[in-house]
Length: 398
Image (cartoon, rainbow, N blue to C red; front, side, top):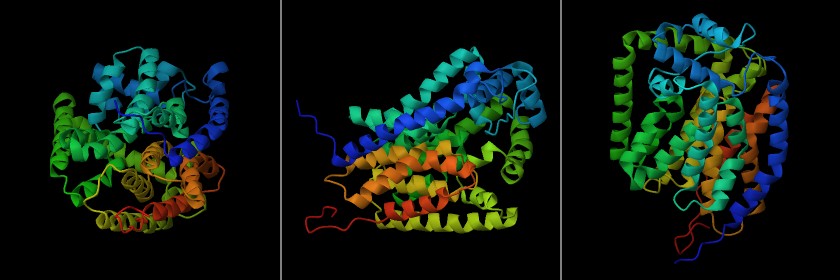
């Protein structure tokens, strides 16, 4: 029986960062959750937050009330009927294939759904990050990610999305069909897959591309057969335009949760047109940087930590509509990269690791406070991650 390799110095340093900051993260989240424990809908929400939205959409789909799902006033009325008149803003922005996955939850009591939903994200994320050897340090780091705590508190699906991206790309080489299926399942949040076709094309992962395309087609056809064409029409004519309206004209905490160039420009007082211009320039920078990196290292392992880090950072910078809890994939990539990094990391690299680990959570807080620093820091992080290491005479990275 082979001996278990010790953790790399990079992993040990990341453990110090993770568990050093975790108490503060838990205190902040606990303070945010406290009103739900002793006040009655004081903020128009419930324990589990957006998990209630997913559960409500599943219940409406099972009941055949499809017209209410993408009709904002009707969906809001359905939520209000269950929560009471103080229910806050609730919308369902996901495409129809998502309802195939959510309908089973709608058949369950909400407390059961909340427990299952709260467990699914952390478990899937830890499995994707810690495979194949499932070292204790990798599992502990996955569960200590600040966005692991916040995704559970918000009832969000950022951990599941991260697991699909990381798992899909890591499996693309050894188990391409399964990797493609995982990537195809991102149809329920398709914008997060914006970089994945380019990665797979550059690395010529044809079987993974085929499996992903087949999964998307099957899920779209199944949703059409089960729910009819009317639901797709409602999504495209009502759901998508309403999401754009929220992006451009929304206000409040939800806007501060979007760590995008568009939202940073809006926070700084830019009008909508100029904000899209800023977003366009940042998107071109991110796409160009990622493509240069991917082309230079083509033929390497798609699932390597550095590759995943570049893809995750580029995705965060390309999209104008993206919430901070969807950036858990960055931390997952970081855990894998530290596991692969031999030797003692220099001081600059340790600072980079700490920055990446803390940026999504504390960047959101600064965004809400009117200090949108996340985007420039994400840009710097992408440049640092995309720098290919020099090769020594022996062919190893220097």
